[in-house]
Image (cartoon, rainbow, N blue to C red; front, side):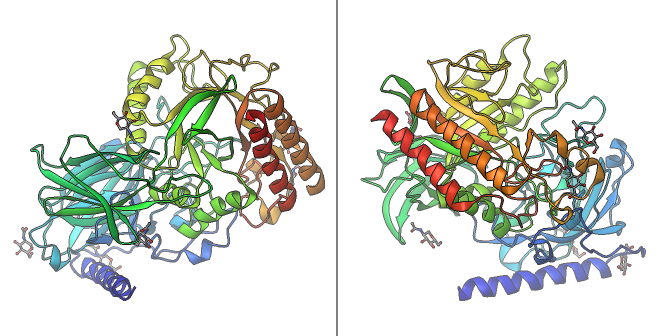
Length: 623
Ligand SMILES: *[C@@H]1O[C@H](CO)[C@@H](O)[C@H](O)[C@H]1NC(C)=O
Ligand SMILES: *[C@@H]1O[C@H](CO)[C@@H](O)[C@H](O)[C@H]1NC(C)=O
Ligand SMILES: *[C@@H]1O[C@H](CO)[C@@H](O)[C@H](O)[C@H]1NC(C)=O
Ligand SMILES: *[C@@H]1O[C@H](CO)[C@@H](O)[C@H](O)[C@H]1NC(C)=O
Ligand SMILES: *[C@@H]1O[C@H](CO)[C@@H](O)[C@H](O)[C@H]1NC(C)=O
Ligand SMILES: *[C@@H]1O[C@H](CO)[C@@H](O)[C@H](O)[C@H]1NC(C)=O
């Protein structure tokens, strides 16, 4: 603890030093508007707690290095004119305004609250700790929406496309170890502008009811770390219910290098193995405690490659699909596990895509866990790594959606190829988290080509990348038989594995697992202080699937719908369901909680009982 505190103080000192140097080394003088949180249409209890040192935690728990320096905090920002602006970067200049990193430029927390942020410049300066001399320096971004061109000390050091994915730039050859270094990032984020058809999830330049304010810019943590010349670039790690561990340690160098892995329990090594970089290898841990929502046991892991060492962690569990008493079921550690979760969109009134703090992000998950949910459907968004870490620790299974393209008639082949490239990025980035149970490729036909059925090939592709999970190829609407699930969407009532259904859903297909990928969505209006105070959004409140006059009616409807689902579990083939939704979002007022998280609509005891009833019905069904 003492060590951690010392490091933290060093970090703060070096960051303020870096900013100080940045100012004095400047040539011309231009004023930068100071940072202040802007008043968003709605705040949370965390808004004022964010301050100017946000997200101090190490951002990548699956591959953690000890020598790191957080670059989050106050940077400079200015709007850029066009795509061509990237050709003339404003090196060595103050930009027009301070901005909080990480944040979405459209959010109040950014300090900018931009209404249009298609082309942007971001700037900061940093120094390299003395201890890193003769080491490589890696610059890491948790996520930048949508395209980032990275310049270090006047030279282009990297480029990345895809608004939801982490990337690393080895900046060793661009930095000066003894002076201040300038980092300039050009961001282009078209969202749904013009002819752009790119993975955007629920973001729209013109929000409307179920589509929300976009997020542009550096919305997850930025940090540098030191590593030896040959270092671990990616770690693929999974453990199953038999104690088998599969590992691939990817390295910066293509040459084969010896690697070591150790599994720890309370600081003692309980198993270790040797292997070679860039080649899968396997070993066995005798009799491990298995991971499950009821007992989410995790093991610490260390991996070394030459002089590089990273810490990670592992859960032992097996996800499969099998027939139990004549019905296709999802199996966790060989047993049918009824899946009950919420549609979890991960939007925040003060931060939009960026949760204001780690505590805020985990608050939502704790509320769900406390009500008895054992799953979340992470809806067409990819979260910061610490979100999945929290699901692993709390014991919440995750069904992860690929962020959708927008709804258009014709998707060009190049747009489809980019969607598929980013689908690969998502699976590779998230596949280590023990809590992830399955992948959703398409939601309700959004971006789903129907002239041929690409979901069959994409399902195989995802299985190749990750053979240890289930695939829900089409969640809602255009189902042609691909994947492990038959997934019905229906509001407000569920139709889960039932012989009745409403088009465009299809009749239940007993060759696959029946799941109700969305239902509920029951709405209830709130007083203005808990609403997203934007007139256009307020005008769409009456589009919410169902509006209930008061909280008693809302909870009564919850009880009716969960009882109906319970009947379907008892009588038919229902293996899981997703209640819409964790919280309100903008003009949608159907959350278990309000958008600001200050109102819990749920009658806690009633919901706990009803949710418990679903698991009991599932247990009785299989006998
Ligand atoms: C940047 O702004 C600071 C004051 O905020 C000023 O001292 C400095 O000269 C400026 N640098 C440039 C390059 O304009
Ligand atoms: C780093 O900056 C110092 C001071 O400006 C300069 O003397 C030195 O040559 C620089 N080193 C590199 C590697 O650019
Ligand atoms: C490990 O790899 C083998 C062979 O590819 C596969 O059958 C097994 O399911 C994998 N196990 C885990 C835990 O990933
Ligand atoms: C993993 O390491 C952390 C600290 O690094 C410790 O708090 C935790 O107890 C360890 N977990 C296990 C299962 O040993
Ligand atoms: C919801 O409540 C807000 C004020 O709290 C009001 O302006 C709006 O008209 C209401 N909408 C509906 C559909 O009840
Ligand atoms: C919803 O409310 C808007 C304005 O508040 C109104 O124009 C519209 O007709 C209403 N729609 C329905 C379906 O009630």
